[in-house]
Length: 398
Image (cartoon, rainbow, N blue to C red; front, side, top):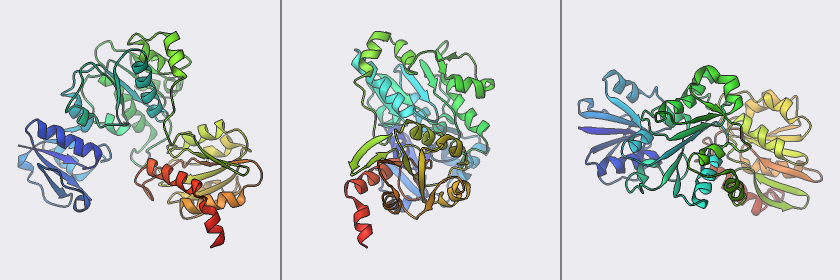
């Protein structure tokens, strides 16, 4: 019998490696199959090709593939087991495990938790939605390592195993409404993390989460410490004093309110990881001084109008680019000095031309990157390159 993988990117390839190591036959389906590099032992086909469903024993779904994909519907009708890459990995892992989810801040929280544990005498590894795919790690696991696993709503949709020794949901704010029909459905996906806890394992939530989605929650503790990841570290024996001392040595990951450069009276910040409305509001609130905001990308169906009250007079000008620019213009033009352009290079050039006096030029898109970039990292790196090379000077000449 054959294991069928839908989506053959990072998690799909990791799933294939783990399945092959277990002696399984693997068929992988991807809409870009012709452009992808083959993998030894894997039959890779385009998603429009016919599948002999009588040979399929299990479907492994990559997180970017929605539950209403035709192959998923077919497998469900036939009673074929449907799991995700994370679930596949957990079935072969015995490590102690921390689960971290939330709309904003989960990557930083995951990396920080692993950093604190590693710095206080434990062995820990950040995995899942950040760093190495969990299935690839499962090929050669270290049983002494504590796994700190970042879990997206997409990954939680197909996670079934009771594998977490403790978990946290940091927050739930509007995001991925291009995939979920409502905020309630998005919240339900996030809250599935509580169903993956081992017996009596603690589950920590924010006050915001309790206030807005308390009816979805059970057997939880509301966070009461200044830092949300402290109880996760305390669960493994890290005390408050140790936590506070090691906290100072942590370096925030790239693309999260990352200082890039100063040029004349302008200060440039890369916040490409801000892929939803609330993340942009958080970034603007932390800026000292006036802001020219570069926003846009692939719209996720949330309204941009909450920015009007949140930004107040701090945001002096907005330059919108990409697929979402037209919607931003319709919702924000009456409230802000506003300009709409095609690409991020034009947005940066326009922002510098507009800026007068000391100002922050902030890339904080509020959208996913997939209309013009492969991911938020590529978008952030391209922004940094353009700032460092002063592309607006060349555009001015042309």
